[in-house]
Length: 234
Length: 234
Image (cartoon, rainbow over all chains, first blue to last red; front, top):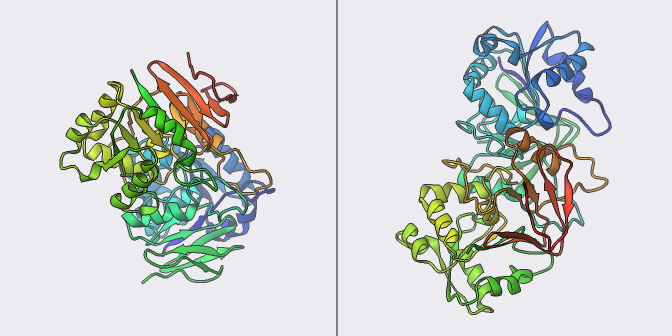
């Protein structure tokens, strides 16, 4: 049974890393001793070791051991043997490029579809979608493919932002960008605001957290979905 | 002699399309009768024809004829024979994917390096850089390569935005994104604010317009460059 949390962000303004998610992580990883952390997205360019120790600190309160995937000689075997996984945020292009280069993407998908718990935040949530083509990140490296795990039958836009009133900037809004994507591919996109996450338990997908999500279906007006509701597309 | 204008944006808030750039375009395209418009970036997903007619309207005041590159049977030959070029904004991935698929990228680079005037705005300016890897756009299609024309020996970030005071959103700032790029490639990046453009005349590259630019060199503190100044990196 799939057991997945895909969060918009790791950190809320004024809180510590993962603070608001700790009760969710506790439930997701109940019965787990060691979580494999996937550090490849490298937020701000920090090293894999630095990133992993940030997670180790945050998980201490939950009595969870953490080991960085970069420390294993054979990352595919590590994923196959691992109990549970967390992929942190940062740059989605870098994350996806690494996962394809190491052939971990398919192994991770198989492990999670087989029922091992998975937590993603930001870039780590993007890879739960069908592809990474609704990321906000810069293409700082060239991945072999934009395909991701497809743990959910739609795409995410993490850190979803409504236009800020009074800002005169003429760059495209988040909504315009998502609509440009849907001209190319008519895939639903969930605009996941900070404070929200997607929960997958078996075949049931729900929106959780403090914020409604903005839902974009190709050819339909965008609409809001309240927290607690199931996410279903025809 | 290279003769190039790369603008941050086509449109300033409260103005019509290209309004603030008309004097610049008039000088750039002086002596030119027909400009080939490259519409592939399709802002908001509009059609090539719609986009071209928007430009035709804006260029009427300058007595410039406009023809869309998409209307030629052989776009490479059209670029080789064309007098001058304008590439409009929209989605940089879509633009670059099309230019590589049609083999126009190299032909356009050769034409512009041979002295034919070139105007870019937003995505059309991004392709004047070394690569498109500091675009703000979503990866809505997968291009065969991220390489662009390299008309300038650095990258651009059009629509450059400073953080907005009081916004509690935790997504990466523009500066953080550019710094993540420079961990991968130590290429200078010019954060080009709306209202500014880069002017290339032969070997001289200057910043023009109403705003200073924010300059990012790998391993250095970011700094401001005033309009009117030459852009030189060691």
